[in-house]
Image (cartoon, rainbow, N blue to C red):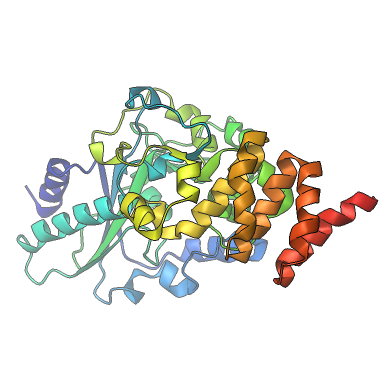
Length: 373
């Protein structure tokens, strides 16, 4: 058994569902794709800015000869989860944020893999990444045969669908590379037709700036015409994957790490709005959504309450008009107005006199000006 076969065998022993190998030569074809995406304004802002780092593995590891790509399934049928009492007001976590933080889990698997290889190969050098690396992980997954691209630009595997987390390891070992899969997307257009903010502008034309999963992670103000499309999403969006026929009849994850435990997948919004930093860290520290911070998730919670149009939410929102954070006050005004415009206008007259922040005042005046229209 050669080293590659040993690595594949060991990867299964430590719970890695998928593994593939590709070379570390510069990805010249990818450069054109990335420049085109940048020109179209499709980038999310979280990507590596240096194109050379994104297309040339040797810029990250001088001795790079090959790249090992791993995949782990995170699909759990919602019907199989523990039955918990559903909060009156809740926000939905996308499956990427169910259970433990996948960054931690996959990085742990990659490090175990590295330890195994170092015992088999003298002078082994590597660098491993999960989401935080400069290379395009989906491109690597496609190139190494882990999966094929769907119209929504997700990587799809025939056994596990698109519900797979990806990690990779750049190494100094010249492994024989795997071939990309011959399988292609069925092209049903369901992901395009069902995307709530039309982020999938055509086959393989994914605009990250319009994707609600990305929108919910951004610190900047969310455009008002997008707020209603967020619905009950507090972090991430699974719609394009839920409707995908490639995700029908797939294998479920064998790992219990990606099953909700202390933090349910339907987050109690009222509790979240009142969390101290200590309480927030206790619940979200090891969750994939937690990295974005309490303020962003609380902002998203307020949006969901506004979308509920339930007047019972007003008593929870009204105190937030005195929150020390201007961003929270601004989105609270929108949420209250969305629930009860007449009531909110009355509030705005009273709070305008003591409001000092210019941006918040602009929002107040925008709604007060509606009276004269």
